[in-house]
Length: 322
Image (tube, rainbow, N blue to C red; front, side, top):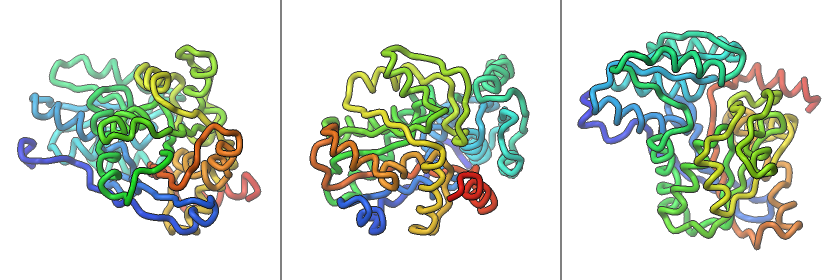
């Protein structure tokens, strides 16, 4: 593949109307299906953009620390661009995700119990000037790549939504969503930023009014597992109308199960957090509390995720007695 002729590494995903979710919510719900991206999540938009730009500048190797989805996107991008990749995983990453990385011809290194520790090790591996370090969420090229999903959604929707919902880990997706909304003239539309309790670094930071590091990730949603949000997402949340909300692990898993029944697709609990905004009535509660104006339609980013299997869903279902 000639990197100078590749337009982009992600696919244009559909934005669909969800009858089950619309019926439940009492307003129109649209889903941006980023779970359909080839590596399994929205991550390929931003990370693909970063890797492509690096390849055009002569990069010879890519290194990324990721609990799964960021690494899969980096490995997939590197393979498409014919560049070797090394992906550093924390020990909490399921073995089947590591195997998926090897399927993308990546070298897999396991180090540290959380992403932040894996990331410190990845940084040590990037001393070579020909080697590019790929941060999974804190880089302008990543945010720029993620903007494209909103540009697409704006073209696909019949009219602008009254609210946009997205999950938050370190904040890369939310940065791209907000920047994309500015680009398409949706700057006045509120964004509901969903995290699970125990992976809530942004919510804690906004409540304390300063960028805050949480002590540990105790949530099942390991792909929301950054201990500290990126500076850019904190700044954007202060500047624009972002409503930070939490759901429990049980609500996130329940949303994954209901979504599987309603739409015959598997997504991770990290994605279940955004779907819980409707399945657990969080958007309706925000309306009742006067924090949202009239909602006629909502756009939910179904961010996807590869750290899910039928067996994992059954295990979580039993664990939370659902």
